[in-house]
Length: 189
Image 1 (cartoon, rainbow, N blue to C red):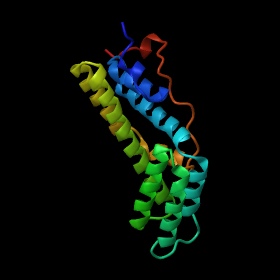
Image 2: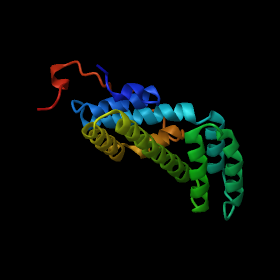
Image 3: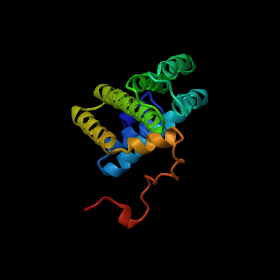
Image 4: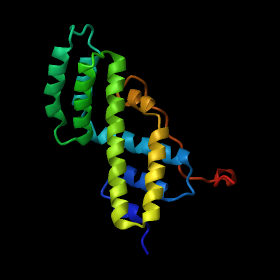
């Protein structure tokens, strides 16, 4: 007997954990949302080179941007070569160019760029998990996993995670554990 379709999911351990929690209705939406945030934070650590992150911080937080932001856009496009081979890094540079062409600058623009990139990556990962479950599991389980992951993404704090990932806020303390050890930690009645 299989442990579940999440075992053969061709994604990182954090995303497999999210799929596992989404497939098990004993875990509440807060657990699933926390797993989604952990998966995104883990992906940020492995998919965004430090050179790219530092370069974008320098571009967005420079003292005085030019009137139209053309120089910043050119610098950002030049940084895209450092993101080669990194999916989230490429998304980050693409969203940075869009945010700069919209006329945003400063901390708010950096946070908005990271937030958009994280949200786009989360949507892609959710589709990848759903597609895997379509091939490996029943229709009922696939729908449950899709709905629970969509709910987790909808309730997740992308703004806070974006500020932490971009270095505008310190990293949060260790997230709450999924392991329930006390009687009061069980499934709500």
